[in-house]
Amino acid sequence: MATFTYTIPEKYRAGEKPATVTLKKLTGDDQEMAIDRAGMKLAKLGAELVKQAIVAWDGTPVDWAMDGVNAVWNKLDPKARDLITSAYNKLHQTTEEEAQSFFASEKVEG
Image (cartoon, rainbow, N blue to C red; front, side, top):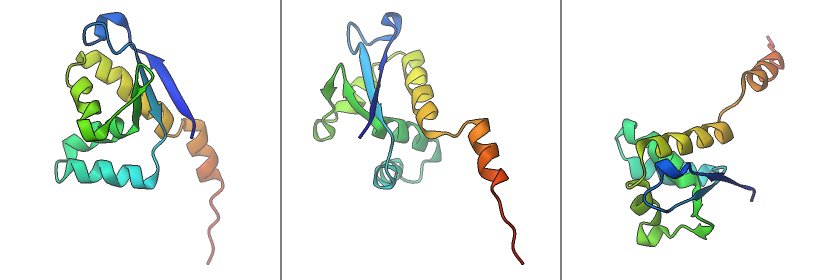
């Protein structure tokens, strides 16, 4: 599994830590877990997907049993959360070129 580590700007950290966040690309099962946590709250789904992709803070694996993601996530500056969300989007959303290539491959039959 490939991981992607980003440095959180010092002014947006929750105190001194975390200095870095490591993300992974989500599997279908990962997405389902995030959807389950969001329940019927559509507005919460985006944040739950991002949090599901977080695998480490400062190189230390997150511990879901100990609420390791939420404990740090909720203390971060909103701009840090936004930057992490942007990293998630970079990993999980197609570029314009990728979308154009995909739709150019369309074949209509019948």
